[in-house]
Length: 335
Image 1: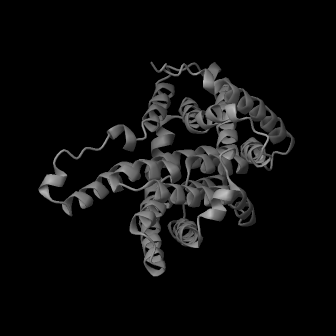
Image 2: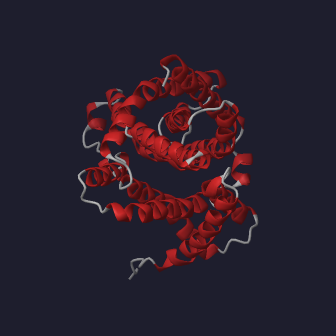
């Protein structure tokens, strides 16, 4: 008889993430131009590359990378007013919606030129357009993608996520962008929520808050796009194939975003003690650092070597198209 896991398998990895996050926050204070987020993801990458990472720490690090980032964002909701969140979110749609379309169009155009598999192309496009690995995970069952396509698309998106963490703050300072401008750029042009957080908070706390709200608004587009994909797929099937086809709502809807909004509402109504907000900000930053350590520890140089050129080229073209169009739209719309 199999015993259910009791959570103890996460302890070694969570302890390692907690210690490394503490070190990252100390380093972030010493070198504020880089910040704790950048140090956290770097420490995670170095831990994995050193090949000294204990095997029993991997479950906890994976949990840290997936769940603690969500918890840190929910905590951040208690530090932001609902009015600010909705205002930023709605104003970002004029950039998010066109760039989502551009990401898909550029990915499919490059995929067509390279004669790449359609499902692989769709997954890379989805990851670039919406929110990286989360979008790929949500779309995979809808598209009935195999493990190889999922692994290749995830690796591609992750590569550009790591690249963005280092390049975006550099170009942001080079272009003398304000915190708001950089927040909008990072939130609309960087693939994964974790990389948005790492890049934007290393730029400034204000940029980080803006980028997080913009990114979460963009992430909600997972829902209509996944259901749209499912509808198109089912239209091409026979009636017998369509019968009984179900999609788990829990796999598509990013529920933590709604908890973030609820936390923001609680603060706006004055139900959250203002004296707790400084601690809430610190805890959110600490959990974020723990999450980024976990995410960095998943980086595998060998995986990038094995994946071939086509997915990288599709991802590169889509990523550049989104990054440049986001900047141009900000300039034209004077946001």
